[in-house]
Image 1 (cartoon, rainbow, N blue to C red):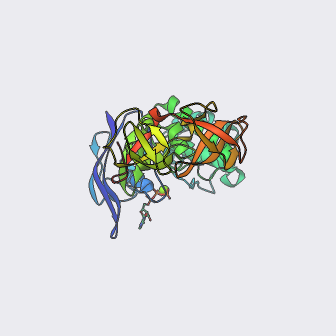
Image 2: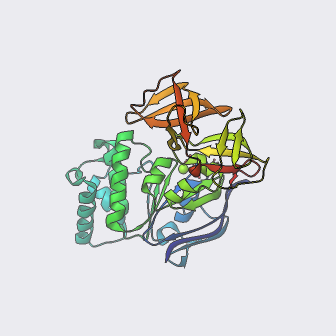
Image 3: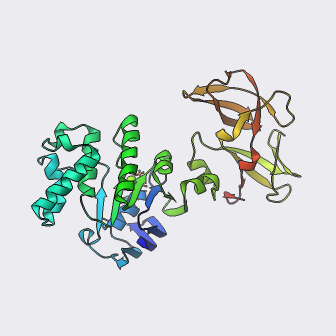
Length: 353
Ligand SMILES: Nc1ncnc2c1ncn2[C@@H]1O[C@H](COP(=O)(O)OP(=O)(O)OP(=O)(O)O)[C@@H](O)[C@H]1O
Ligand SMILES: [Mg+2]
């Protein structure tokens, strides 16, 4: 069953059309991530689902019940905000217990739930402290604890990790994934970070300018993007885009270089954009018939891998190689491009053919 069903949802802020007809179903127990560039409407969508913003049109169902006009507290949701929003004059324990006490839970049950949440989040030793006595990551755990003690049907997270440093983000991401596996609850998580989306999601909903550009499993979106936007948004380093024309079994790039087309795409002579992920470029043998001979312009070592910027095909591409590939600026390389994994894009529509 879908714990959340959104149909034809619109949101206007004055004349500004922030959500333009969103249709969405979130199955029970699933971890869904809303991702997209800044300003695309992720928070607006989440806040409208939560009832913190009023819908301008359409319908929202939670647990099979129409809640389009229901108050937030009547929607069976628990939400974690980006800025924690902890009560400064309450201890960690009282912050976590706050929602339960407000709902008149028995004190014994409240204590039990707070203790369990604190244990799951590794903040059991901090219960008597005040928010100002905590690090950013610890505060974040308290905010999450406050949400998970509730029995809500839907857990909503709006960029909960964006105030944390990179290391802590990585750790908390693991915690959130573990939490989902333990609680088996339906969670919706907003982020603009495509890596966070890829690593956390059962399903990604990729938003752009108030519409859903594509939704599906992380791997489906990564391997079969529907549009140039999706192809470019997911993946790091970004997918390379090269302009070309369809020939007989090949794409001819702007500088005349030819790439083989594994299957027929588009019509001969038609303009296309070839999308190639840096990971699908490899080092070939010098003199190989399928290799392209190029000269490296710039290298960026990352520790395990190395990103090389290479002029190619009338443009510049980035290839990802082993850190120990003996590559430096000015070096000659023979590269092989795995065209079976390339995206061929129609520049008129930006759709993947
Ligand atoms: N209260 C408001 N009044 C007017 N416009 C708003 C309001 N809230 C949001 N918007 C506009 O709606 C659009 C979507 O905003 P939203 O906050 O949903 O973006 P977002 O995807 O969450 O971005 P970010 O990643 O930066 O948080 C933006 O263009 C924003 O300027
Ligand atoms: Mg936002």
